[in-house]
Length: 551
Image 1 (cartoon, rainbow, N blue to C red):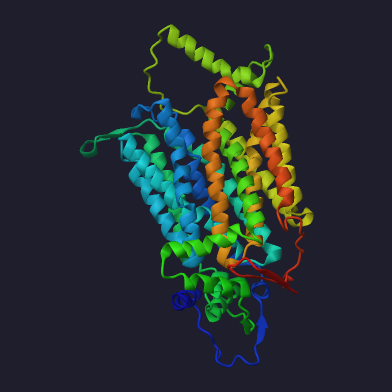
Image 2 (cartoon, rainbow, N blue to C red):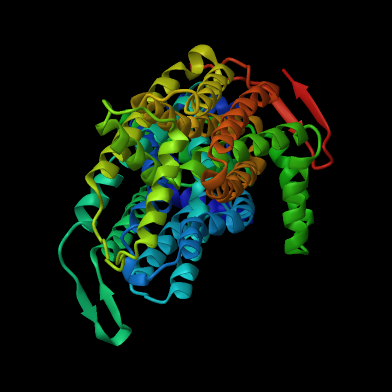
């Protein structure tokens, strides 16, 4: 494995050494953090941050865009239960493969997992648009989520490993700012594509191809674009170094230096010191090559043993709570916001509590059924109010993410995480304490913004774990997050009808509790210096769980 990764590192670097690499006795020896600082921060870093943002945007297009498809896919004759399955099956696919792709990224490489899975996810989106049968459609949506997981979690490890301690948090938050900025075009794209007046029949597969099906294809294009952009990027230098290939890691850093400082710039000659924790981890994995299951076991067990047991448990619990609230309520974004917007238009009339307005729609629908009014009308257009409020939410999310990124190193990761989770949780409770429609809408949108804390926690996770465990750690924590999405959306669907107030109170209290739990995450209170001086402390971790610290 080491030899193949060495070749991969050299191939992706696109350069050849200009000096004899055998004469190493007088070369300076640097740790990877110091070596990355030598490349400076420039064009390469901006490019990989942008590509990472596009990959995250591709994930958002594939998952959240379904809320615009479900209301208009009336030609599929979906029942309420089938709509619920269609909304959550992508998350189920991500959940099922997060563990697998986390393992593969830690053992085979980040780049070689992220790029092909993006191509496959895009292919599934295109194929999915041509099927009318519900079960085939669901199966393809499941596979779409299955392959999107390959990039969903691993991109954070991949991006973080091209930056040192002082820049890593900014890079991760920067990619999420780009992603959330691009997400503002999702409602606009949905409105412009779905609301077109055309359709045509494809006889040999018996499908009436409508604009919403084209929107499914459009949702897959960001994945295709980002996969093509990855051709210009190498494997993670930290991963290549973790495989024992110091030369391959050096050449990748040299390529970064050339991008950042110009073709004619000279890169300092030095030797990279391999992380001892990576040596021990690699040895453990190598010994387990006799069995795939045993290899996965060796890769996973350290995450649930000291010194990482506490970190892994807390990160999984907090991600579960954040996704349960954020994604759980987001599935009902259009329905809730539309009802509140109607009430806002009649602001001069008698005010009503938020749950009364939400349940008002159910009462009216029952009355319509009692009067036996014909409802067999295919409404295949989106209302403008849904798009407007979706755009407002994405804009707020982008601005707040940018602010949190600027504050990350100044005030620390815990204060940012705590502020986001506590204020969004209080907003969930506030929805039930006011009868002012504008405040209700504002509180509800801010409650959904609790997902910003997940991005900060991803930066925390990258800092907490060594190279050979990092992708698996992020994958497992986000796997629990996706599980929270499924649990949250189904719980909200049950509670909103008969126990609406309880749904908001529980979500608010849960989010606040997650903010309190974040206090106990190891090293989350550690402030990062605003300089390029790396933290030279090495953590030595074996697969038996022993740990030492060297300064």
